Image (cartoon, rainbow, N blue to C red):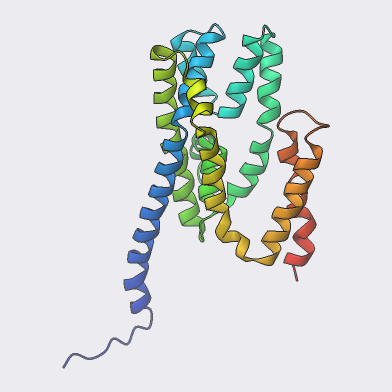
Length: 240
């Protein structure tokens, strides 16, 4: 009869890899579902770019180098309406201010050489941050961030190419079929488990009220920054 192991850490060592693999598979499914949900918007951006006077390669360069959907749409909308390049850049920068908060959230999970952090910053978007920040450990947060960011990066650029090169009315497809509701639904699915904690529910409620109340008075993109007040307001309760 074999003797039982005297190493108390052995059971955990046997269970952890399996649990880690299962969680990674779940993360990949989340990343794939969000990336697929963004395809109609990538198609619409490709069409909007050509309508604003950009070539196919310029649209592709926009999606590859800028790679922030809302800022890209804001910029091509300004250009399409006859605005200046400076106005287009300003609109995009204003919308991208939220990336400062994303960086603070993901910094603990993205430690490493400067070159790695610089490369990872290219996929610092809403979707990668949502997936990464929803994970229970820094290791899985890093994996979720990269899985989400790279999945979206590939499909966003492919759909931009198809939209710019082959389609002419993808924007109508997005609204006519209600595909614009897929992204909020996906984010809600990621955030929902966190609302089990009273502090998180309070933060979400305060943040939502502040954002909605500020919409009529501030430029597009700023309300989401103001919503961070929810997190700050609940910090004293979280510390108790």
